[in-house]
Image (cartoon, rainbow, N blue to C red; front, top):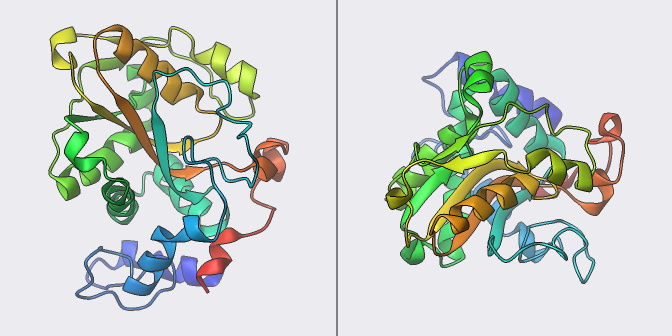
Length: 262
């Protein structure tokens, strides 16, 4: 898989070519740019073979789910596409940390299809990407959640609202923090500017990865306080009981779920 993944990345250097980012097959004429029909079908049906929580997307065959057991009601549900493993992890890290903008198209389109199959399209009024603090966005040069949200909005023909929810705290990274530390880190991190923009709206929050859900819960909490109606979320990847319980340096060394595409 890693060899195919590196081979597929050549498409970023040669825009005229058509490779599947997962298996390097030709994707000319496919419905989802950068994803062949076979890989797309298998990715979108992963929930049939990998146990995951229907509320938070946490990949673990455990009931009740230990991740969202104590979640507040402000966030109704989070839809996730894949576990944070293997090639799936490499792709979102390349988008997030290396600014591989082209990856937002296949990942965002697959996220959109998950939202569609979940039956949420007709209930969503606006899409809101999880914002970065202006200083963080200036450092990075982009907001990867916005890139994903733009693709999802185009695919589902839903409007984006990008200036109603802002991040007012320039926090240290969430990476390496435990569940309670993440929740404390996110407290009071977001605020709403212009309540009329979200009043009585059903909102779809977009982020790249969900681990404990602290970021999405913080966003949903302030949106509900300011008058939003129902809030759901969608992310590309979600953690699992296995990789979330490990030290940060060991994550990704567990079973490569992406190999199930083979």
